[in-house]
Image: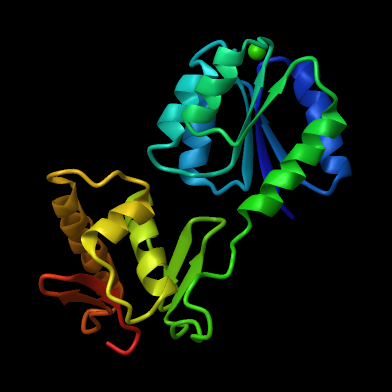
Length: 229
Ligand code: CA
C-alpha cells in the first residue's frame, strides 16, 4: 500500500485529502509543520509527499529544497497562489507536480496515481543480462539497498552510484557517465568527487562483507560493479 505524507497546516484541506487518498487505497500520514515533515522524512520512507507551499514554520519551497538534499521522493506542491512563476520555481526545485487551491481532492488522488506510475522502478538498461546476484538488492522506489540482506545507510549520491553500477554488472562507467547518473553537470573538479563517493560506498559495503570488493577500479577508465568479487 503506497504511503503518502501530507504536509498542510489547514486541517479541513488535509482532511479532504486524507479521505480522497484513503478511498483510493493509499495509506496517509498528516503533519502540519515543515520542520516536523523533514524530520519524519529523514527517518521513514514515503512513496510520495504532498506539500503545502504556505506553511507556518518553514515555507514549502524551502522544505522541498532541504528534502532534496537527502531524498528524491516524488512530491506535489499545493498552493493558494496561481502565478506561473511559482509553478516554475516549484518544478525547478524538484517537485513532480503542482496543484492550485481550491482543488478537487479526487483530481489530486488521480495525479498521485499518475506520478507513482511514472516513478515506479523501470527495468534497467543492459537488457538480456540477468540481474546481479541477489547479494545486492536495490529498491529504486524506496531508495533502499540491501547488501547480504542488510540495509545500507547510503547518501543519495552513493545510492545512485550503486544503482547505476549494479544495473549493468561488469560494464565500466567513466566518471563522467557516473556524474551524469547523479544528475550533476560534469565540470572541472567534480569528477574527483565521484572517487570520494565511491570510497565511502566501498567502506559501507566492506562493513557488511569485509572480504568482498564488488566495485572495481579500472585505471584511467572508471568503475564497474562485479557481483563475483
Ligand atoms: Ca497553508
